[in-house]
Length: 513
Ligand code: SF4
Image (cartoon, rainbow, N blue to C red):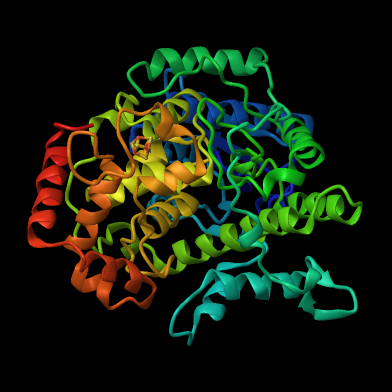
């Protein structure tokens, strides 16, 4: 055997760089389902099922393309249980002359595979992941010499460089004269609710996926989440169908309602394409091109299309750059010195807080929550509660079907928890329950009152907001973007401050939840 081509569960792309020069007469693809990937964090059942179902369908696609494959199933008796041990065992058996792979998404996995190659004294050819618009080297060059990094400037460079949504008369200017339409994209649904939102694309599990669902339910029975409503796209064809349904039916209102929430309705006008993208079933270029084409054809407004493109061409590439230029130290950052344990009900949804109950229940049922639920409900609460950021990170990495560390970690630890001290966001995202009341009707069905910061009916978000300001007053006072919030704190007298502290203590003790 000349070459063993390593393909990981989030590298399901027949055109990946690892296959360049692939010769079916001398080369073999290697894939492995291993328990460690579901246990190094307590991976939810929907997340594990998503990866395994997509991997098994990709194995069929490889066979269809005539590429020889060594595939280790999770339930095979000789499964070694970890990527490193399995790869080592298969190298001993197959005796390849070298290893080839596309650069992995996770630092941990890169180190494990490099370790095996070294132990076996085999050359390991790690190739750029051209799924992304930007290489890590290009991001590092962008970051070099800048006093502070901001996604907005990186995103504008990306727009110019890749000529996406640029003015046809002047290719230095953004289409429509403006880079950012955030101000148009913050609407709530109002009393009438979201109305007739076109349904999301659902894919009934075929025989391959059903077998995976049974395996996961049996093997990971104690893991969180349920599989009863599993309907994610697990093949490239399904992912393309989901993309086109989104662009045709929901993109036009995506922007306007991207920050809105509605009880019992997880899907709304969102794309739900992140898992398909992160497993590489979709290429970001085809996603961006489909959205831009909808605008060109007059089927979606610029504000919506720009908001969507910003997520793919801007945020997604930016967080990958942050991850790979900051690891491995990034993983242990804890700027605010937060040490509390994650409340146990994050794993069950068993809380009286209506907004959190809704976000957690749908997360465990579907492995999905939209970005505002992640940032401004589950993330916001953990930040103000003072949960140790590594525990918050482990929870997000466990529960979401799209969670791969390179994208999840900077979003959670940096953007959500401000643990990186401002690398991802220029200020901590904190708010009282009034923000959630503005963006959803959750508070109407809640036993708590977002306007109250102390007393039995005080909304825990509101109490913890004031408590957070007090605990970090000195640090926040140095941040000009926090000046107004810190100034408001000065209006509280000592007795009011003490009431907040007492109520926050009760919340942390679990007496209020
Ligand atoms: Fe959430 Fe507070 Fe509103 Fe209840 S009152 S739904 S806890 S924001």
